[in-house]
Image 1 (spheres, one colour):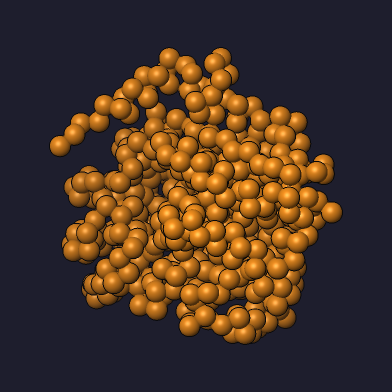
Image 2: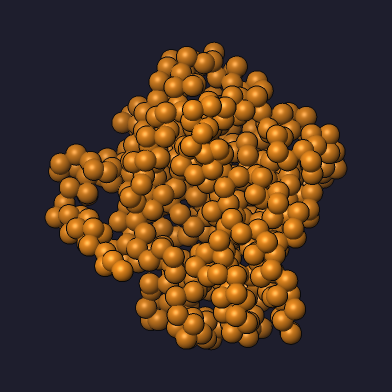
Length: 465
């Protein structure tokens, strides 16, 4: 029996804005960051990150720098709800546990099921999954994939989605794939389950020379799918896409995708993509506000009617919960669905979203463009392939900051390498946490350096209107 005795949080920030990694039309100077949740127990699975073991039950949510402290505060408000609880009790009925953690009326008021409090819920829930998987000595994907359809469905709170997907329907969908699961498991164990695509070359702040060299490098590494950021300047976009197509070609078996990071209005999205259509992208990601369900449907319909190449619509990185995903699917507004492991309320809600996508026959392409996200999403895509859709779908890989994790996500021969270490793969190296904690300890954290002080000062001097 494992009993939860406490928790702690850490604010970890990496100065990625220095080299423009992560830059896009909406977020030109992102410092990839993590609000870290560490669970303490009365067992060997304790949250003493200084020990450097792989038994620390942890999770994180992804942020862009300022505001990480707000998410840490929200985690600290939610986490006392599990202190004193037995892990066996919490994991016996995951759907009931998720509803419990989501039902503090005073904390729910500042959501509900959206924003900072929901990201904090996701961090806490994912930490519990990490703890549970470590006690079982299995990676999270394996824990889920070994569940019966009934056990899988008990992980989900069906409130607000049972008008389109009932527990009985979900069980039937999962049962349909049970006979062929062993065949897919063979692909999983041979690292042939989750094809990778890269965004590493496509950040908007990169020079044309860097774009060209990184694209060439990625093709030499065997990538076949490439995503570029767009939306800041139409002529610049056209020039960058010309460079991309010059390198990856139109007839070399390579695929191009675009991402506007919500910078456009609906009509802007349509007109801008009409201009970029000749470059034949597979989809445009986040063409407008993630809350504009009808707007996404309008963009999708307009792009569908373009002559020649059909361009799909993808979104999900900033979609708040299963309810908004349900409505996007009901409206036929998506070609690809992109849940974020940290934006929604943890793995339990992700499982619900995967089943909704299966019901509407929409491919799942999780958002992975951030620190620790590929570590999370490799599990999600594996679960989707093994248990839910039964189909391979591409998964984003961003080649930044993996060196800070004990069990980093990896790509080999164009596929994500299946994680085998127990847990959810997001445990950071102790020296990395200490070295990039904010505000950190003098002479230990980078954020105490003169270079960091200059960066912080520049962040406080934005030009106003």
